[in-house]
Structure formats: structure tokens, C-alpha cells
Length: 274
Image (tube, rainbow, N blue to C red; front, side, top):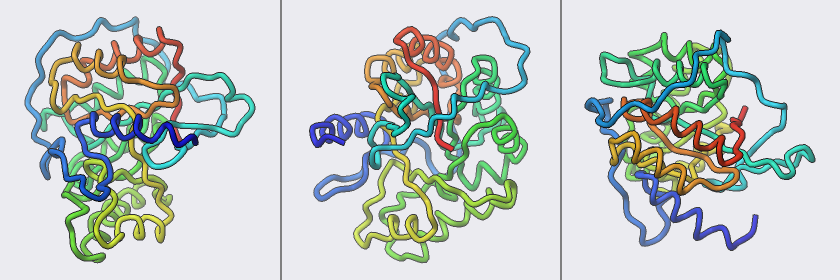
């Protein structure tokens, strides 16, 4: 990956509504949600939907394996078939979140199914515990599942390895109980992975977890308006972009059809990691 990309990625992370990993002299940014899902209903009109498709799951991709070029870098692939492709990965944090919790996981899954798009969901422990049916649906419909801690703390501020392990591995245990498979992907709250003692990266490394951050933030936790969220994604997207959104917000679901159509109009194909 070319070094010239580093400033661009750093800006994109900071613009995402969650701070980038905490390098020297960089502080925290406001967390997108507190330690329980508490979003209020959104504003703005719903994007026009396309005709529902009778299919039962998002279409599979073409078998090309995509990976980050580094934490928070765009996706890349060594597969010769990837040459010239413009791809994007949609990711959703903080769920699963039910309608009763004023969340939008089910609606987002409906849209992804209709549009034949696979995404990556970074789930919390409280989301898994309160909405196991939505977690099972994410899995059954072919989406990739990563974890996002038990309670969404400012993880990098926790002073002990044991405390960080409790947050990172507790949710992994819940997910593995459902899937029977080891968790492969982790996203730290606010994107912050450089704690003073290096515990976060050490726990990830020792448990074969890849830290996945983003290049494009939808700012849905802040904008709370479907059209503004759509515009934010479309103006900041880059080839190989990883888009940060939250399925705990109803306005994100309202923005999603326009985001998908706008990205397709720009020539992007949707991929996920496996």
C-alpha cells in the first residue's frame, strides 16, 4: 500500500463519527452509542425502494477474496480477477437492534436481501443477548459477522488486559455458541485500538482476530437524516471503501436504498470479507 494513502485514510476515519485508533496526541471522539442501544426515531423521508425481489438471500459474490490493506485501509485483492474492479463493503455496528429498541436491523436485512447485497455486521454482547433471532437471521442470510465488544466501552481506556479480554472475548463466546465457529473479525468501539499497553492488539493477535476499521463514515449517529447520510457516503467513498453505519438507527435504514443505488450508479460492486 502506498504511503501517500495514509493521510486520506486517517481523515476518513476521523470523519466517520468514531475516532481512529489512538496514536500519540490523538484523543477520543464521541462514541456513536452509549453502552445500551438508545437511538431515537429518525427524521427525513424514506428513499424510494426498488421492486422487492422474491429471492431468499443476498446473491453470493464471485469468489474473489478481499482484505484490508492494513487496519483502516481500503480493501484489496491479489486475485487477477479483481483488477479494475470498484468494490465497496457495507458494515453495520452496535446491533442487532430490534424495533422495540428503536433499532433497524430487521429493516436493514430486508433491504439487503431485496438488493442482493451482503454486508458485515459487528455485533455487541447486549445485542446478541437481547436479539438472538436477528443474529441468526444475519447468519442465515449469508452476512459476515464480527464482534464489537460486550458493552461498547472506551476500550482503549481499560487499564488491564483482563478487562479488555472480558469485553473482547465475552461477546466472541456468545457468538461462537450460536455459530459453532471461531470469530475472525473485530471492530473496536470508536475504531480505537492503540491502548497505552498494547493490550487490544495483543488480545486480537492471540485470538486470531483481525481488526477491521473503515475508510468512509456515514456519520449516521450525528446527521440523523437519510438524505444527508446518503450524500455523506457518496461524496466520501473511495475504491475498496469500507463504509461504517449503525443498524441501531432507523434513519440509517431509510438512507440505505439510496446509498446502494448511488454506489451502483458510480460503478461499485458490493463485497464482504469471509
